Image (cartoon, rainbow, N blue to C red; front, side, top):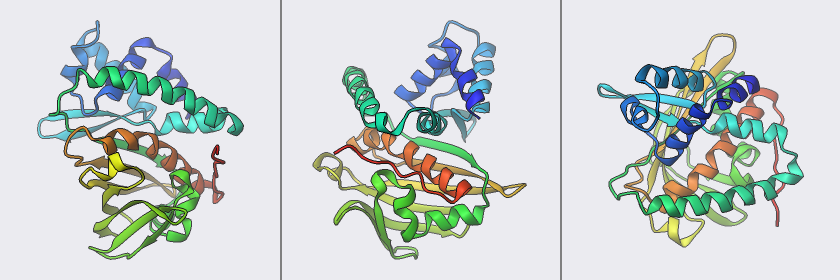
Length: 261
């Protein structure tokens, strides 16, 4: 998998495609083509390489095919190749760069943008194993961002809370439960005043069983109601959480990150 990711990132046009999808998810082929000095066929060829490395995922919307960045493989490469003691420093440097770039881009963005974050990963574990991890409060700190704990009323309309210590960081309600296949939650961020002011968004977990005791997990986070503080903040947490979930499902051993104080 690392070889596919490194190969996909080796071409400057493919990196530019990822930059475009980082700036705005849900782009059509025509939209991406308009930003690059290559033909429609050339863009399709590069997208095919990125999709093969699972760095880009696509979703049908009527007659159009929308493309989204999937940051999980990059997070997995980071977890493998960056020493744990260096992670806080590297992420801080990346955050500084990201904040500066975001401030510039926000000047050009309109309030009509409807963000949607789509993550897709293939896991060498059964759908039953992945479902059990996602729906087990006891296992939440083994894969969630910041090792959050949780308490959940596991029924439709039941409430849940993901917590950092005794403080609720995220809360919401269960909208749908289809065992082993689909879980839909409302998502209300509470970790800071700016995100707490946003309306609840939506998170959808979908699990597709595959031959050979494997499955595909897709997570869609959308319905933000526009470009909100929450829509910008969650892009940092989901790749790490899903990468840790994959490690736990495949090995049975949690990948616990030590946080800088």
